[in-house]
Image 1 (cartoon, one colour):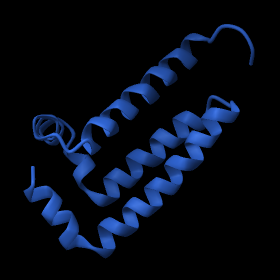
Image 2: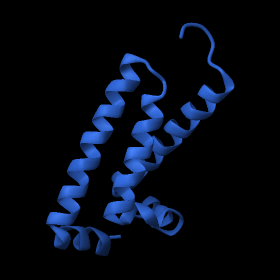
Image 3: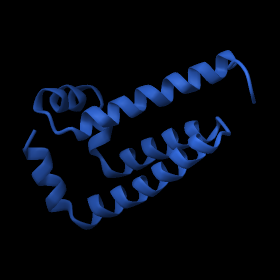
Length: 101
């Protein structure tokens, strides 16, 4: 679709951007950000719920039907699968990261 975005597309874009910022702030490993995110968004510290959140974010990106958003959606799916594998395969690594909060 060319031209202006519909209100539903603006809402999806806002949700995608806010979830991306949330993930960026979580992965920066800054203690003051990570503590606040852990208090408010504890599901990101559970492997399965984080996997589902990444899939939800990928589906939001996929709905825009643009080449860049499709590439982002595919990348998010790959990251979700790899993240789930690492978090389930190496739980001690995950526990070390949780204690470094």
